[in-house]
Length: 203
Image 1 (cartoon, rainbow, N blue to C red):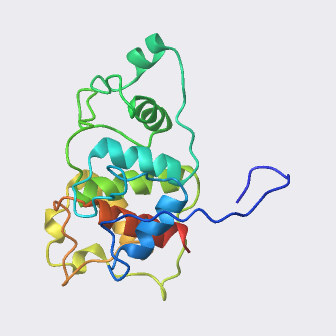
Image 2 (tube, rainbow, N blue to C red; image 1 turned 180 degrees about the vertical axis):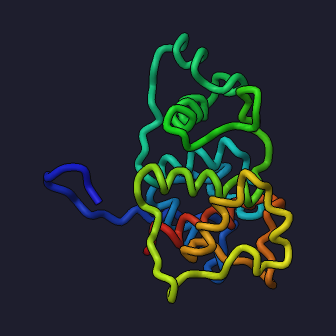
């Protein structure tokens, strides 16, 4: 999808990571997002598929994935309107943009906890908010809809604030559980994040 008419060049931009084996379940997903410069890995030639993902890292990747430009503004304005713990880092402008657009609500007291490991329910809610914003949330009819949240064995572990987003992403089959569990409090790995974005962007 492009925002304007113009001339475009289609090019191949393959990226190979030494720690992403061709037969790994996440290989295609990692290759897909790396080729689109959604991620550049954790070090030269390494992706870190089993590494945990922080809340700020996911916001940065999410904005890149959907072409939402991280807004640059004056230091004073960003300091006043950003999360109090957004700091001065590679993710500062991304958090400012996510907060301004309503994608990220924070954890309370104007804090975001950018370096905290992100849980599955936190990732899904941020994703749900972004998809709503850009009107990319898939629509499904009753026959093609996924299962109800209540059908999962650990549905009661989903936080109240996360229920609407998690329920809708399950209903639209963006995410699925494992062994009848949704595992909302489990930490998200970089491989899992890649798979979620791949399933969405590769539709």
